[in-house]
Image (cartoon, rainbow, N blue to C red):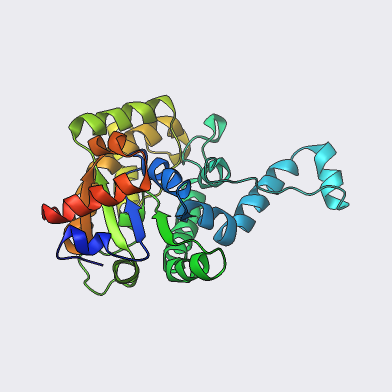
Length: 288
């Protein structure tokens, strides 16, 4: 959805918006605020963790539980059940399943297994994004929400081809929603990196980028054995590399399919009207 004027955007009877950008820029915060003002909030990560990777996550819990003799017997006799308690605010079950490659004694998983889980996440994210038209309809026809906001994952730019005008995911999102990129500046980038250093978490990498950075990291640290890699050190280093890699991809999506708002503008949003006005003003300034 593209508009010639901000007023044309304001005049819509029903808004449908996809918010995208780096993990930590405020997508979920904005989506949560809109949800409080009668917008249907669709979390791509939640959909991934419940609909498309739920069984993988729970099976991993069970593998760990089977290592404990007491729980092993209860599981095998079907005396207990284990499930994931994932939520919009707590995506830890999904992050824990993705894991980080490296030394098992430091919490790492084998690189081959890590790649398998990354592939599962990629397939799940694409499916979750392609589910958006269905959920826009469900938001209106079942739940009677007038408006819809998609809180996309930070890896949106990794599962699409920004150079393909017919990319199925981007074409679907652009046709059904207004795509809004939340951009930061160098200060914000450093803030996100420092925050990640304090609380590292698993991330999704495109296959070629992951392979390249895995080889590069081992060379930098003079490590030849995958199991000798410090998983936390790789996660922190990899995140900074990933941030730099993703920015031009996000910018390309915004330029070709949507609009850009600044992370600095988010504190000015206290209602859905503020959000609508911010986008409308952005359209009038021609900031694609």
